[in-house]
Image 1 (cartoon, rainbow, N blue to C red):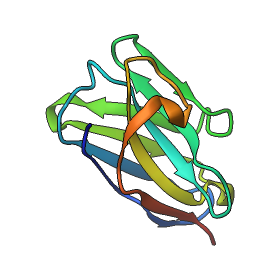
Image 2 (image 1 turned 120 degrees about the vertical axis):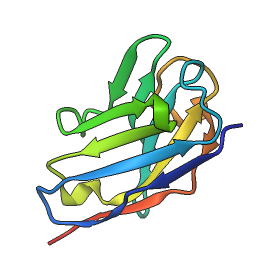
Image 3 (image 1 turned 180 degrees about the vertical axis):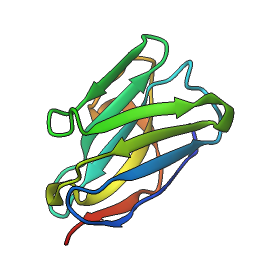
Length: 124
């Protein structure tokens, strides 16, 4: 399993931006999909964005399309989630996850490595 460490969460006003980072201990982005999930209080963990280098693909939940962007930095062994135009409903704990394979997915059952999570709060 991969070790993943998230950072970059915090408190931001509606309409603001944040960038989350996911440091991957064993850089296998060429062999595994990496995704961001989020879990709000009382709700199930849900997929937000996925990146698969092998299949040159990304995927986004409908609720974040056009606002969030997933990307990677090979030199830093890091995957990012740039979040713009944030809304109060984006408030959640955000998790980075490593996939069981190379295909991009927003289904949590396709992922077997998880970070500890980072809190994002969107509030005025």
